[in-house]
Length: 158
Image (cartoon, rainbow, N blue to C red; front, side):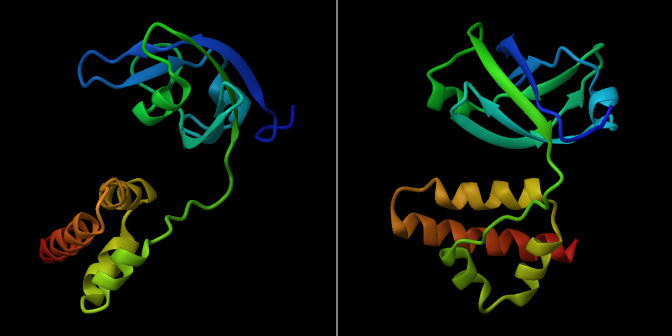
């Protein structure tokens, strides 16, 4: 069997993570056999509409889990308890976060903050960018960009 390029599709019920309010689906196949890894990065399409890049993780149970982020559930008008179509395949493409202009401008005077940002994992970079871009007003985005730079400079000092 050629690992990695095959797409695996399944129908699953969205489960609620009562600990932190997140949601997930259980992956009904042997992930290690299918993808050659116990924690593979994957490309996912939910309900043939919403694309997502993430990882399959094992959280103590017998099967791997796939998170279904709130923004994905909202885009699909789904909630825990609903069923969802999932198509998953190995993601071997590099993960790169595009730095928005407002953050790039904030980095101009603080190259150390940018260096810290670039040294972070894709997930942490994405969290910072989503925090900034989730603001509606330009002024709020600028304030959040400055706050992000301050946070990154503090992290560099640690």
